[in-house]
Length: 533
Image (tube, rainbow, N blue to C red; front, side, top):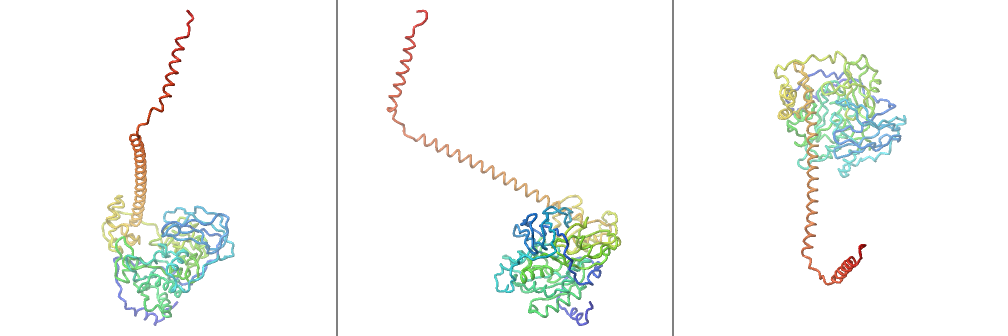
């Protein structure tokens, strides 16, 4: 799609002040591989493998049994906590298993999945009515609809959207940021979504603006997506949202799509260390999540499909596909013409922050935005790691203003208490440090290792503290019961001690009778003759 001179002038006419975040790098975006074609709808697969835990927070509880027939959009797992999300069937069919199955996860481990054999009918379940008049309804009812629909962050974090749309009591939310930056190389699903469904995105943004009651909406899009910027601006021009919504092109630099980095670029504000944007009155959402919110509220449809980029030079026909959640990676690759050449590496996500998949028999989840098959030229074998030369390049490019070299040393020496003093958990694992390291040290792997170890130790610590608390409670209960028994005994003794003496005259006849009987028995013994007489 060519961009008209008028649209370029409009793009350049944006006069809003932008700020810079620390560090960042320029990397080849490789987006032309997949963004030239419109989004395609994947044919319904014969089998769906739907993980029952596709979000941050508590896993969902299964509501179905093996052998049961389910309908498209039917809830098959319910949330088990406030920070949780339900899971719905992506199509109609029969549940043939509920079992552990490999999923797309950095650990490579399996997770509980519902396996559905589709019937080809794609029959919808009965859906709730649309809430077209949501501005007149109780906001809690609208949030509950979004929660029922299982909407989560679709930019990779998968945090339940309904939770982020609850106004804070301690601080007013004044700004909604829509993250259309999509800074990760190769990924173009949000780009195509903004080009083709800009109106639907804005409908979702309007709903979120209503629920949060914010004063302004800022939609940040990297300036290497001029078509998306133009389509979003054209769609905005036809709405009454112009008074509080602004579409802002931002410089193309990685990782401008990081939540904290985008907030810095658009507002100049810094999110506190280990804090969240809501602490400074800002909430971030993704264009895909906005579409899902609009579908949930205006159509009563749950989140059961998503747009995913299938790309890389090892893929024969890279493109963006709208696929049912639970579709296997094998089906996506086959629909894109298979492999042009054997891939050097298969990645879920982008080349910077994604993780390698060891097999293709894993399902698409709500958070999966890209399936990347890299050729040997795109992903050569890493050079052997050398000793750190203390050049400082890693600190120069770190967008979180950390000291990667110090983090590396403490992670390597397993000094996990010291590493937290250097704000390890502020690391967004963007990979900038490893990208520029002349010694080819896999820095991000060390940071992930340290985080995992700290989390594991914290979990063990919590378990130990819980066990100690239970033991203390048991000892307290036993001591309390012992004291209660002793108090009862003392009470009984006191009652006996204060009881008046009884009259023994009533028992005198009985004692006399006993004494008389004893005397008669003694007399009889004396009267008995012996053999010698």
